[in-house]
Amino acid sequence: MKLVLYTDGASRGNPGPASIGAVLYDEDDAIAVTVSEEIGTATNNVAEYSAVIAGLEAAAQLGADEVELRSDSLLLVRQISGEYRVKAAGLKPLHAKVSELLATFASVEVNHVPREQNEVADALANAALDA
Image: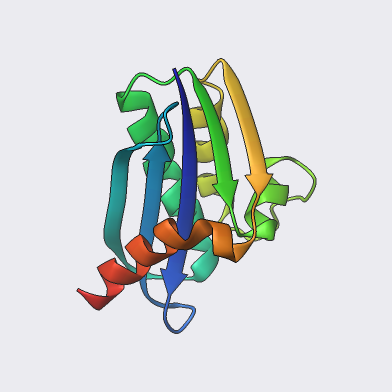
């Protein structure tokens, strides 16, 4: 089963109060699962990675064997794809966790999308902060 995962992280203050949003779509383009949670104080990049981790864990729980990750964070996409090195010490364990989770799927795609195509994940992240 293939799932499409959109993720977003939010931080007000950077670092500041932070949250994550993720939405998984099934093969019929229907929402399978959403995630909307506060994660405490964090940077935006930590929130972005945390959203990916939560989304990949949800995809695994649903039994997905293929995942397409879509994010509007170009830095995140390029780091996960190996195009950029992860220099920030705080991101290295999160990057390692994402890599570990991605390795559990038979097929993985990681794609950058414009912010306008990531509105649901963005709204979920902001809703958690506003709650």
